[in-house]
Image (tube, rainbow, N blue to C red):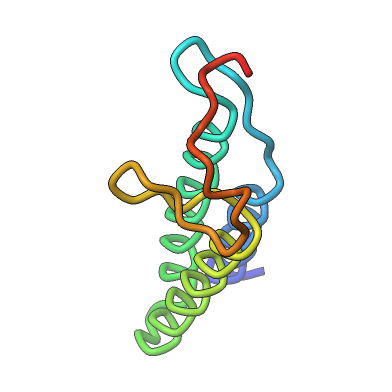
Length: 105
């Protein structure tokens, strides 16, 4: 197995982990906010690994990164409350647009 294959598999695993790992309550943040951070951290790290795995072919790297970002952003918009910009949650599902509950709920 080459380093590129390992990086591609690790990148895909991080993308899936960002989707699958649940959030938890903390003293400062509600579960949804923690989940949102896990989701986007997994996405960012996964995309970096996909780009590195696609090198030295820059076109493949850019295509992998674009596809991953489009898929993860689409998943976040249509299935989760994970897109929060300027304090406002963006989601296709109206109940998901509600503000985050206070910590511990």
